Length: 433
Image (cartoon, rainbow, N blue to C red; front, top):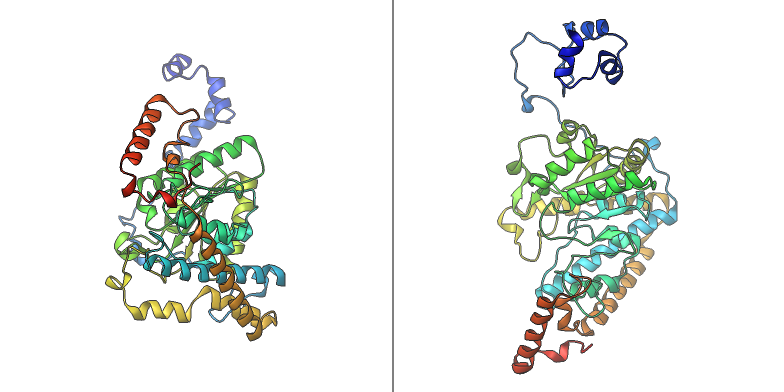
């Protein structure tokens, strides 16, 4: 009767069942499931206990923070020094400082009404450059909206940054996106979306496609600790683990989700604490230590590709600037708190100290670079500001491969409207073709 009973549960035969679970005989199955040594519940790896105890998250130490340098730029354990060349480290430093300079000028331009919106990267430069430097340029990046440094590392020019923020005729997005919503097909950087979390399940889908194609590449997905509270984040993390996707989830935990401090957003041990629950390799790093970020990302990439599994990196950092030009952070944090991170634990000053200790950098080089960097940014800024806006008809393009009749009709109505009320539209600022 045993084969008949098994058939009722969808098992074709005893032999087929034994083969399926890789056990040689039914007697072995019986021994396996009758043992009291360990519970056999699917979906857990537990042991028995006779103590009635709840797990208290406030009574154990949190996940440690991996670092290479101390706050003064001194390598603590020489074995962890990535031993990067002077040329590589200098590029990191120049990229971080140029990003800082661009932020300052574009932030001020928004305050002057010259662009509509901006978001700075102050204090988080180490997370951008350290992670981008460890990736292959062909790896696909899904950013949020504070990863400009990763694009800068890959070669996105100052002119391209400025053109996008101005939405002029040379903007790759044809003026259809808000400022700082960059994208570059050539640099394998997916165009940024404003809503939180949309990029996370998209990144998993791309990584699954990479897995199927076996192209030797991985996907990098950046997000903030605020985004981790979105439903898309939970779906993405779970899908990536169950589907064994080569994706790196890189969380920039900068302490504040817009105006909500992290301590008010969640009660657990940061974002890294969630990794093991999803069955993912996880590490927490000092995001203000560019070498720690580089080492962690490099290793995560190796694991993601060789083992075909996702990795979660939580980079602990601090958002020195306001969330955006629409935010006033003094309403929810003190000036002294911001000053501490700016003066005592900044990723740029930490890397500069490292370079000084190596004899790779000095005051004369610092002065010359600052002047040259500002000149480059201001020149690109001036060029972008003088360019015309795209033709207004671009509003109706790029959604469909062939424009459908109802969109064509809308464009015709718009054209008639603009011609009728031309005096109310600054048509001289737009291209005519």
